[in-house]
Image (cartoon, rainbow, N blue to C red; front, side, top):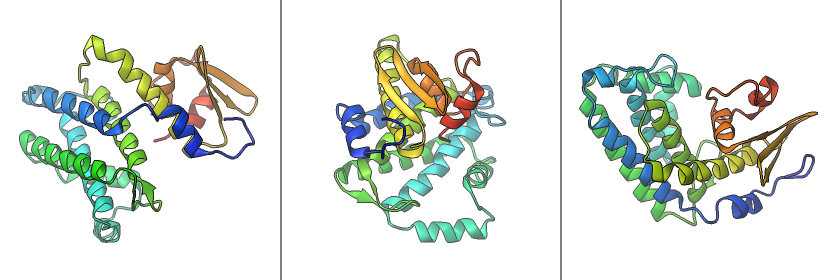
Length: 243
């Protein structure tokens, strides 16, 4: 993608996503989270995460609450959800996140896990059934397949926040698909940036500033997670954040 040119998302998706199955990726990430969370004792549930102010219980509550939005998209019931959220004082993404956590903060850990497990399974099944079609979202009709990539990436990010272990044999491939998906997300949401895959990583250009990032730094920066400031100028990092 070159600065100044319109972004052809179909072309970017063909380059970055065509060899990936987002439904398999969603299933893999959900499996890891479920297996890990199922082993936690109370101390483990109350351990801090990579999300400021949230312990593991809070983060699973956030994931469970996010399924309300996913199901509203699947059911074409976004208007009804927005009415409920408005009545609860929710006005933006941040207040929605806090609402989902607060609503489940006093619930038993296993109940929150069960709610998320069932909700995530339904989302995966119904999104895959609509592969090739669009679903309604808050930003309008959107390809179900692309939505699945977003959800897989969100699960992967929060799995890392939770401290979910990843088998050595899976790490390289997992990081590779996350980098490819991140380049697509940047093309979609940050068209003012120049983002180019190179043999040595990903070139990101913001105005007169540029940086070539390895896969780990690219994914962390786009998701607002800590990166080495010596490897990425703060102004470039700020321009890349998707969340």
